[in-house]
Length: 411
Image (cartoon, rainbow, N blue to C red; front, side, top):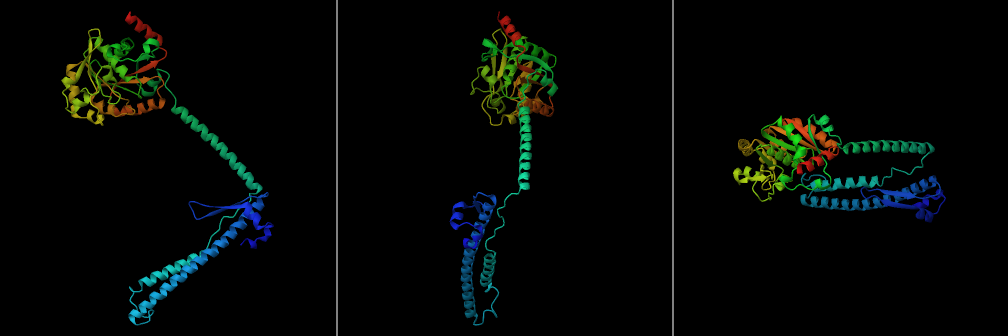
């Protein structure tokens, strides 16, 4: 077919060496490319090869369809002859419509194949050489694209920076959530920063001011302690406030409602297999046998109800009548019931307990992500519970005061 394109001024051998074809994977298409010193020559040669390929494929396709049509025609003639012999009449005169169904199907297939043969191979996208105006337009498009890319990158960086903004100031949570600051707990350094493993080790002095602030809001009843995100220090806050109230002569009970973290249970020295909250709510164990008295080392103690056996949906159990009855009995026995819970921004336990409690204490740690604090603000109105205030944990500015208070209390 390339013999008809001698006006290109090159031999077929050159075309074969300079041009190549690639079949598309996801469509019945063939892409022809050609290299030449001049763009126009490359385009002309690509189009010549593509047209030649079109002609060859058209001829081959027509030959295939012609043979198929011939075979269909033979089958149609044979079926008509059989029908004629069955009726002893010419088939085209009087044959039942149902008997002609097969012949009609063959005729329809024959017509379809004829249309396909006439269509042949299509070629609708020739190679073109860009003009100078086209090159300028491409350059302009590239410049606009680069500018848009820079703008998008700047927006992305701003969004990421906003998502990574951290809470550094103890007053910022008050401005965002509307809650009042009850106390700043310093970041522990040196020997004071060792992990706390027992209730007796709770740093009561820095939480004394927090307990005093809570005293005016909730002298008795049920208090929920929750944070903006995991590892905010809710367990330490719960245990320390409980210890502070107990040392002031209050009867205090602490409930571990964090079925995954189980921080209160560990501080009380309770193993996971010991009966606790989940066992009481599912009536596997009585409340009286599940409470554990934890001595604080100075004659005072705190009653602890551990998390109990792991439950797949503890939040549902916390909404049951059994939970209401459990809290009613605990309020009869103790002045204050403090419940340690996972973050209300990611876990449903706080929402389940809100209707049973008299107040909510928030714990916000330094370097908490700002978006978490914003999410906390959005969820607080849904709980329908009084927010008594928040504790700012791991504050850098109160560090020296804490260490001195701890040293003085030990002396």
